[in-house]
Image 1 (spheres, rainbow, N blue to C red):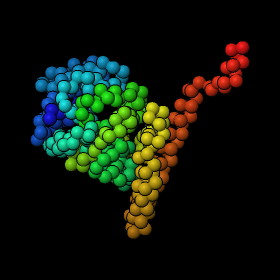
Image 2: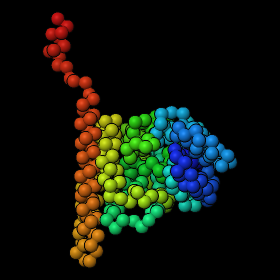
Image 3: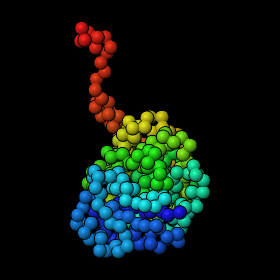
Image 4: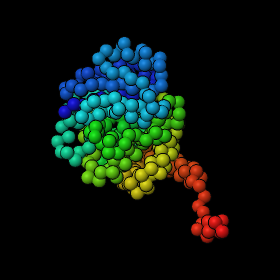
Length: 320
């Protein structure tokens, strides 16, 4: 199996991170077929990376600015049987690709994602709940190895042919440089893929491990708040594309099962001597509220963009 690895980069501020990410791919026990680094509308970075990464295909994002456009450019350029995506600020463990490849043993398996662990620049905030690890791009508490609705975009792989079946990542969903911290381009893609091919299986493999760098500014509660709100906005865009039922199925389960359990754990920890347990419980409640507010705002904006309905009677009157 030939696996192409696509890494999307956009800023020179992550120069060392990009080099480390590429280096971790070169150190895999199962060698990658190729490494494709897609630079998102940054000619200076493109010019620096090409001589710095011999043997790596460094290409510009020829599509719309943003993560979706970069991923689509990487898919178009890649030639492997499977295309794996790695964040530009992440480091893959040596068995990352091998662990993913092992799960493509059945033809119905269209994609495999892995376990993303946080690599905090400073220590993790004591108030930060593991149930919201997705806020910093990591696997959240409550995920279980096996079939899942969608994979997490910074640690995911797909058979090449699924992009012909479902199309690429939708522009307008996902991050753009300097913009609000949106996401969910991989969620929308995975749901759309499963709607197009219902027998599709997507797997979460917790032995395919990467470490995702979390800068100090993302350890602040202000970032937690803004990221939760942005996730709600993103989910509103996802449901517009794929429907509310599929678009919120996993979120409902997480909100009804994992989050109440996390609140209970936090309160229990506070009672047994951990004063930050109360903070984690409160953060779960606040995070859910911020996300819900973002979803509500995104849904209102979506409805405001719809043209007003015209009744059949009015149409007939105008025709006369």
